[in-house]
Structures are given as structure tokens and as C-alpha cells.
Image (cartoon, rainbow over all chains, first blue to last red):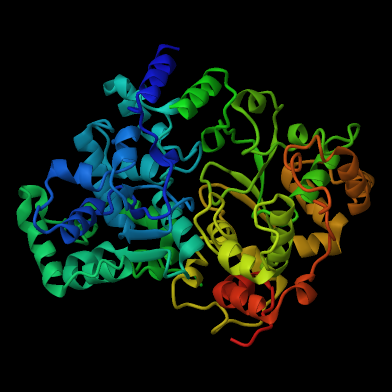
Length: 284
Length: 300
């Protein structure tokens, strides 16, 4: 009850976090990536592409390309338009006229997601990577797909105040990696106007070329020179965390049962995206 | 600020419409479709199948097969479980048992046009072709456009390649057969999925309803199914509409000179749509139509 009342107060002060239910405008631009897919790297590159004079820092990225999960509703409302917004959501058609979606090999996503959550304290330090993949990353049964459900442990234990910013503990529905990718691909895979799908691996291997595609898609009209500048600024502008993770770390780090489980559920989808399954023969 | 005060007051009284924040249970069955795909008729069929003593009408339909977008938190909580819930949402990972109803987009376009006029959502002077290209095929709405909604539900790990840009399922595929429908649909993560084409349901309503009954877990007794089909006939629904349209949330403030229950047929597009409208739909969504067995007529 106290939480609901505090939420209401925050709502009236526009300090609440709307998450997925934020009211969108048709000129909004969305950068979407599943957690652990290198979305921060994309966010930094695109931010620097738009304004190479002021390289993004950890702090300014939140103001210039805010994500749906941290910024107060009132501040979203005051942002100059067109707004650029980062999200982890599965397909949301409302107001999403232009979407840049970043996809990454799910075996690397599992690893990256695991490390992120360990650092953030969202999973127990004693949890093994194999357990994490089986019980969290590939969760099937009681899976309800809510963001707050997934993160509720962290929200309840460490950030009680944050619940007071959320309506009914709801932040959004990122779903599982495969569902997230497939919801966008299924809905818009054939529509090159409303979806630009990029692979993280291409963004790392050919950042200039890939970023040029983003610039063309968003009609930013920037020069090739500026794309080069943006890539350089993203590499040097920040601190140690500035370098993107190298693709393929799963080959040495991810236990075989975890690889098997991921490939047995999403094998043909992975193949369609150019991530050849390693351990499982894909049946036709 | 006034809007926010109203929202806050509704929230306190549990009178707001939570939509995606509604609490969902594993035993909920969802009857999902893009709007104007025969969803209301199917709601009547399912409602009359489940409740044998209480005939479904436009007055009680929101209680019998409630609309996830049309009920407040308080109202939703009062619906007895197991529930069959109607939804027009694009893919939602929380829906674990899904009946997905799909209809030829060319017929959906015709039906949407008359519905938009009935609801006064488009000016009277708007032509059907302008409506199709400027409204119907454009995205950006909550329910997506036809292809977004249908595609988000029909993709799965096995058929994902057909949804990648540049791939056309017809390019190398064998001729379409009905068995191909079984390969469509979001079945991952222990989900149950039943794909129903509106056209098949029209052609063999009792057979279609029997499949639905088995899926929901209702006894598919032939008498029971026949009764449900009779009680959901287009004639009966038209009569109910005349008597009750002012009481039903969907039609309450709409034009009464355009019926909600229209022809209840398939293939109307053949004499209602201009060739350029057909061509626009087929060139944008032909890949999906092909998966579903809706044959394109315009040359590619």
C-alpha cells in the first residue's frame, strides 16, 4: 500500500519510470538489443555519430540516448525531438516507426549476460554459468516474460525505492533471447523501412561500414569522415570499458551442456542469422 | 496534469486498463488475431461452447470471453478461471496457450475499411485505396499492421529463415499444402499454439470448433458443438446487434447505418478491391500470404 501511494506521488511529479508503456511519438528512433548483445556499444557509436564534438561518456549516454528503464517519465517528455531511445523490448509496434535492432550470437549473449548480472548482483555469486543458462537464460516453465519479474530479486533486495517508481512492478517484456529476436524478425523482417537488423559481430569487425548503414537508414546525412570520427571517438572517448567484447568468447568459456541446450532450442534460427551451430546437427 | 490526475484516480480505484500489465495465469487461453479477422464470431463460438446454459450476446460477451484491452484490473480479476481471453496484441511472451486466428489480408482490408467508417475513424470521403495504403498498411499502432501482428505470432526457430529479408519462402518451396500450416506458430518455451484460418472455420465451422474445443480442453461432443455453431450464426449475431449495439462497448457510439456483423464471407476483396490495392497488399505481404496459402493474383 505504501509503495502504491509513493508510486502515485512519483507519478504526479512525473518521476515514475514508465518502461515499455512510455508514450511514444512517431518520430522517435529506437535502438533495440537484448541484454548482453552489445547494445551499449551500438548506443555509444550512434551517439557519437550524431554529435562527434562531444564524445559520449557513461553519464551523458543516459541523457542523450536514454533507455526505457532508468529515466523519469517527465524527463522523457522534455527531451528534444526526434528522441533516440534505447530498449531491450520484444516487438513493440506502437510508435516504433524506425528501429535499429542489434542481434548477437546467443552463446556469447548468455556469457555476457551472466557476467553482467554477476557484477550487478542480480544472480547469486555461487551460481555457475551452466546453471545460469539452464535456469535463467533458457527458462521455460513458469516463465511469464516480465522484466520486473526477472529483475525483481534485485529490485526487492537492493532497490526498494525503485519499486516506488514502477506501476505494479512493471518495466517491460524483454522475453528470452530467441523470442526477442523472432518477435522483431517475424513482425518486420521483410520491411526494410521499419527495421534495420544488424549483427554485433559485423559491428565489431566492420564498424565503419555497419555504422554507415545505420546512418543511411536513419537518413542522418553524415559524411564518411564523420563515421570514422564516431568510431574513433567511441574507442578512445571512454575508459577501459570502451573496447567492445570480442565475438566468439563462448568457444572457450561456455560449458558444452549450455551450448547444447541453446543450440537445440534455437539452432535453425541461429543458422538463419549466420551463427552456425557447433555441436548439434540441425535437422531439416 | 489533469490527465495525470484522472489516471491516478483510476489507478487507485483499480478502474484503469492495465493491458500488458494484467496478471496472467498459466491456464489462460488466448484467442488472438489482428482486428477484423473473425475474432468476434470466434468469441461467440467459444463462449457458446463453454457456457451451454447462458447464450452469448453482445451484452455478456465481455464477461464470457473478455477482451484483455477492454477490462479494468478489478473487472479482470472477477472473471472465473480457466479463462479464454480475447486479444489483438502482437507477440506477447506471457501468453502460453494461444489460438491464433488469421484471415486473408485482402478481406481484412475490406472489413477494416467499413469498420473505420462505422467508427468514424476516417473521413467519409476517403476512398478504399487511400485507406489501404495510408492507414491499413502503415504501422506504428499498438496492434501493429497485419503483417507485424501475424508474423510476430507465426515465426518460430524452424521457420525463421523465411522471415529474413531477401528470403522468399516460395522461391524454392514445394507447392503449398495445408500441412504447411502446422509448421507456423510460436511454440517455444512449452507454449501451446493452434493456428486457425478464418476461411477454414467458415468452410467447416463444426470441424474448426472441434479443434478449438480439444485445444481448450472442452468436451468436443458433436451435439454441443452443433448447438454452439447455431447460436453463433451470422443471422443470430445480426439480430443481436440490432437489439444490443448501443450496449456493447465496441459499437456504442458508432454509426448504426453500417453493420458490425457484415457479410461473414470470404473472398469479398475480389469485387471490392481495385487491382492496385490488391497489388499493394500482395507485394508487401505476399511472403506471409504464401506461407498461409492465400494465393496472390497480381503478377509479381
